[in-house]
Amino acid sequence: MTEMVYGTTPVQGGEPILPKWWRTIDKWAMSCILILFAIGVLLGLAASPPLAAKNGFEPFHYVQRQAVFGGAALVVMMVTSMMSPVMVRRLGVLGFLVAFVAVALLPFFGTDFGKGAVRWFSMGFGSVQPSEFLKPGFIVVTAWLMAAAAELNGPPGRTWSFALCIAIVLMLAMQPDFGQACLVLFGWGVMYFVAGAPMLLLVCMAGAVVAGGTLAYSSSEHFARRIDGFLSPDVDPTTQLGYATNAIREGGLFGVGVGEGTVKWSLPDAHTDFIIAVAAEEYGLVLVLVIIALFATVVVRSLLRLLRERDPFIRLAGTGLACMLGVQAMINMGVAVRLLPAKGMTLPFVSYGGSSVIASGIAVGMLLAFTRTRPQGEISDLLARGRGR
Image 1 (cartoon, rainbow, N blue to C red):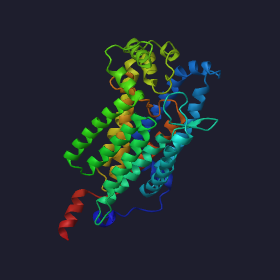
Image 2: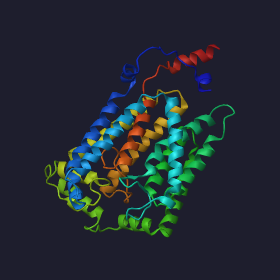
Image 3: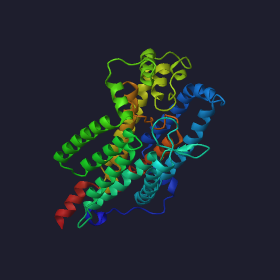
Image 4: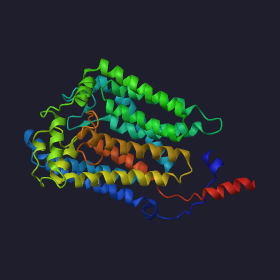
């Protein structure tokens, strides 16, 4: 239907896959992701040895695992980025169905590893967090439904996508995982806004989020404890936020020096949720600004390339993936500097974690596939052709 409305431009056939992929891929965005992964390995060398010593492993046990996970993530990212939008959509739908069932089964077969939130499946040799894989699949399915709703005699895709979003948010809130729930709701809101949602509806949604947060505060001790800690004018120096805040303050502009930081010996999540505190303490504000610039480059370049995209599914899915990546990074760093309540959210490609880094590889691979250069013609040519009919 999209082709009937917008028309198509003939694509030259016979070009090998790899040269065509290299010619059409966003090389700047891909380079930024590779640099972020290299920074993650570098910070892992500093942050993970204390945890390895505590658990009786070799000093670089977690760094080696991160290199394996990261290598797998980069392979998945490259392969996914070579796919056509139709193949990415099929992969996203299939992955979403598997992840959705897995999240639904967490209350029965999941574990919390002593952290108070049932978010993982213990596999013996490791663990899997299905909500990480749910996010890119949800974005693709939602974009598909919203794009279908815009077609003539199309299904009520926006209503279906909203019902799906609420179901996922409720399942994540039951874990509880309010951070991922907010991220899913944000991704849906961004795509709905791009698809042409009325402002009144978005204002009503914001009010519903505030009401939901108030209800969660009054009914969830886990949620209330984090909000109270965030709102308290005094930070307990023995908490994770206290250690992270002090480390960022001590790092200053250029840091205390490679390997000279002390926060990694105090923070149990220094290699995951609070990896930015290790970066700020040992390398200073300079490295933090580099990390921010890398994420910003990926998001901004992707959105600019999507502005030229005529296919509504590609435009919506790419926008959702790019914004979700940027907001997750913003939330992780915002928690570390106490601009946001603690969320338990990783920094994509930088934090340690198999589920996180591989799911990020899938999401960015989809984004790179959607932002590849495709011959589409100019919008002015299409308008002129439409007037000539």
